[in-house]
Length: 446
Image (cartoon, rainbow, N blue to C red; front, side):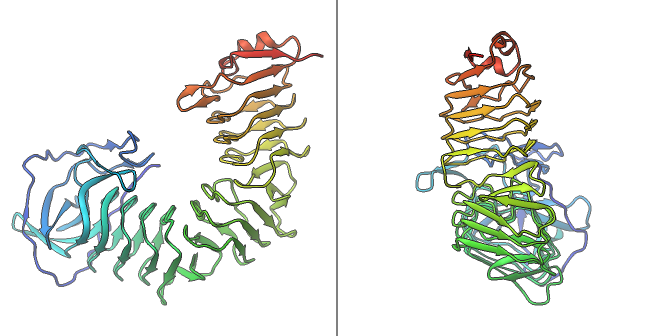
């Protein structure tokens, strides 16, 4: 996911002591862009930092070294950032994760710092500033107006008080942190996607009265008129949840990582449902849409478009080891069956034309699958990490090319399954990209 941090030019001033700062002689300040790769889980998967991999100066404040970048646009403003990503992280045996040593324990951020004789107002917390650190508590001054993308990503942060000066909280700002509750101040006007994703201890989100953009109810975060569900806390322990008819949209990754939620009922007006809503919701077993919903329908806990021509979402923990896709379905959405834990046998019927990217990704217990002759297009990664897949029956007479990595387990080509194909088509499959990765191809009897 691309990460970007926007600094606000407007400064918010408050009284604070000046802090003396020193420049790190070993740091070469550059303006290049550094891409953070997923290397042995040292940094979060997919995180891209548009900030340079350097800081301009450091300050020791209340015993903690804090790293700063000078804002290149605003006058005499700076923001908190991280140390060098190139510094090796430390492995924590207790948690099994790697952490950077820049920030540990409690960090008290000053409102103002002095560097080279210039006073700088601290107006932001930058992208990934406390990313994968042992930070447990932070004091944010009233001078800060924005919290960047991934600012506290995968930190041990257990409590935070967001001051009433903050107007923006970036994407995934607190993702994977240890927060148990949080209060959004009345000043916040923008909250990014996945801001509290995978916060497994977070049970309650509150919003201060007077906030013009957001509200909360029963610990769930909504926009002000309750037309959009923004965040459902990852640690909320309710097994059942009903979305009221006022809700017409659900923010991306709104339920991400909640392992308690089992059954969801969606009332009539909700308009934008997709397969990613309940990612990593390991116990999610059934979704029910009201009969008068104009856009969607459900059958036996599975989500479809209203005409049942597109299968959108098969719940991760849906009961039953076998499933037959209805004959009305012409398209299976990308990632529709991803991470389904109970499914072992899947039959798709004639009439199906398109199978989306990663449709059966990480369906670890899937053993057999039947592909009908009407399928015209199969996107990439459809069988990634289907560890137990042993039988693929394809009735397609003229196979189309698929991604070379369609059959892949832990970066190795998947070769253990047997592919059964129509009589007289073995050579075609053997010479078609993707299908030719399967070593054992057997023609079925006519």
